[in-house]
Image 1: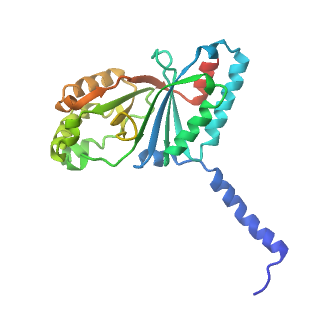
Image 2 (image 1 turned 45 degrees about the horizontal axis):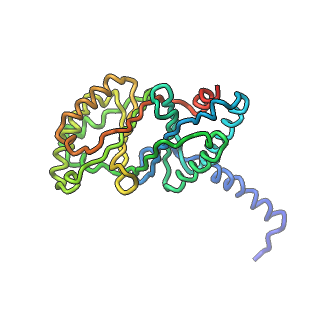
Image 3 (image 1 turned 45 degrees about the vertical axis):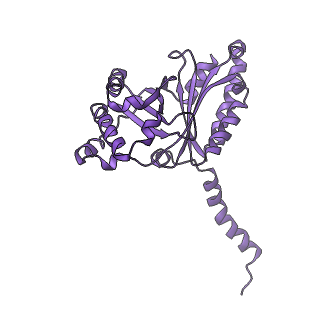
Length: 264
C-alpha cells in the first residue's frame, strides 16, 4: 500500500475536524425533545433570599452573567424554559422547566445553577420530576373525539400554569376500561378549550411524591379558569387526593428579561 505523505495526512485530518467540532457544539433539537416520549422533565422553583436584594446593582448584574454561562454550558444536553412567578406568587420568583434524555443532565444543570453567586441566594422552594410517555387512554377513544384532539394548540401564549396531581389508591387498582371511561369524560370537558389552552402531561409516580404534573400555557386565563372548574365536576376528580397545592402561575419570559428584572 502506498504510504500517505505527512502533508496528505494533515489535509485528511483537517477535512474531519470541522465536522467533529460542529457536532460537539450543536444544541439539542428543541421541537423533537418536546414531542418525544421518554424525556425527563424537572420543574425547579426558586425564591430570591433577602440577602440578594441588599447586594448593590453592579454586583447583581455581574452575578446574573454567571447564570447565562450555565445555560450556555448545558445547551448541548438539555433545553430550559424560564418563567417569572414574582408578582403573581408570594412563595416564589422563578420557575425553570428542564427537559433532557437523562435525569442526571437536569441535576447537573441545577447543581451548576445553584452554585453560582446568584444561585446561592436562591431558595429552592419546590422541585417536581416527571417523564413524558405515549398516550395511554386516547387510542381507545371514539374516532370523533380523537379527531377533535388534533386541534392545533395556541402559540405564543404569555401565561403558564403548573398543577401537580396525586391520585388515590382506588384509581390505580381500577381496571383499564374503568379508567378509560373516566378519562373520556375528563377529555370531553377539555375539548372546548383546545384552541386557547395548551397542555402537556408528565408522569411522576416513583420519581416524585406526585403522580402527574400538568403544564398549561394560555393567553386566556378566564378559559383556563372555566376549564379547571369543568374538570372539578367530572367523576375522575373523585380520585384526586391532591390537586395543586402548590399551583404555580407565572408568565413565560426569556432568561435575559428575568435576569434584568431580578437585577434591578
